[in-house]
Length: 481
Image (cartoon, rainbow, N blue to C red; front, side, top):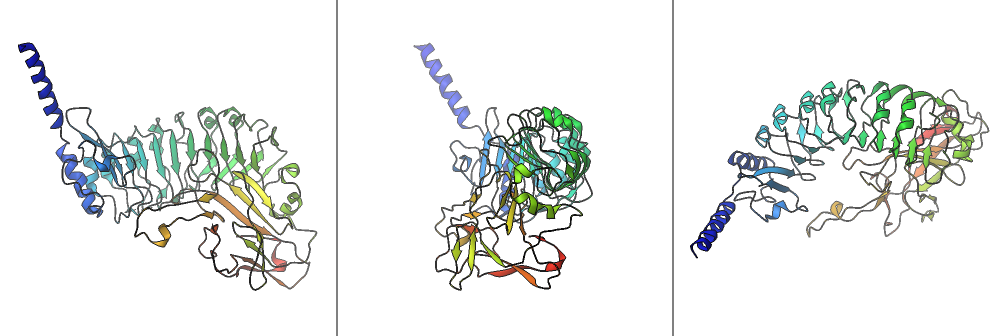
């Protein structure tokens, strides 16, 4: 009986000790300072220990979210999700006291200013999502000291290059996304031993120089986006060894030569090499079912790929004079919808083609075309062109209501919801020596009820037709919007 009583006593003591487990007070103070600094107290009113069991703010669906690790005697704050909240101002220096933090999400939150040096104290950090913010200054060298990083996203900011060489030390990275850098040119020399990378996106980073051969050794790579840079030289033959690669985006660079013969691997879904001075023939398997390929703006012999648009697209090649001109005319496009005639009699041609991640579409009358490249945000199931947001708040504003829209135009993937890169251009043929003007109209017809599909461009959504571009007929045969 005495032994049994002793066992119950030990059990009771252990429960009491567990129940009294508390969080590092230094971390609690730092967290409260962050909450007050960013005016989140109305959403995250933590009046007791932030690591209590079953706290509402620890739920995976909570936003803002705070979660902890209590596996040891003292609890530590390991997760902060402040993403998509309104956080005015810079990251405060107090963040350095959250040294056990592993996951930090501050994407699309409005944080501004320089990334403070105190950030370098977050040695346990594994995931940082900080895209779509107003960060300024240089991309910090100290990121290279955060060697536990596995997922780093810094797209759509005002940060300046170059990408520091210290990034060589980030050997555990599996997902690296940097975009829209200003300032100095960057190179790819820091990519040496990041062989765990599955996603590498360095779009619009002022990259210069050649693509290093060692990228072909990154056997786990599934998505590679180096588009909208100043890369030169040839596409490495080592790319033929990227058997796991699904998406390859190299458009809008200065790459030359021919495509490697076996660059289309067994798992490749999309390849974009548009707007590069490339030549030669299409690689093997380029007509494979399920593959989308975009080679517009190159000198690659792509007649089979582009069909009837091939002749029209000669206009996009450097130093090529347009021929076979026909009279110019005005036309209007119904963004993201079917054919429509407005009350004033303007006929809008439908824009409802389902396009691949790297593809070209030409209108039935050859007046306009769309060159499309990129994945929609982070959708693992391939490209999607409808975006939808839903707010459950009863008092939410109109912009928080459900929206569905086709992404049109040129938009950068790191911006909030970085998203899809689309180059939309309109081509037309004009009379030689004609002094006429040509006008391109685009927009929704004026109706009482807006269509469920809206343009992402607010300047044309639901507005009457307007002149987007006016150009002398003798000045060229295509217009890039």
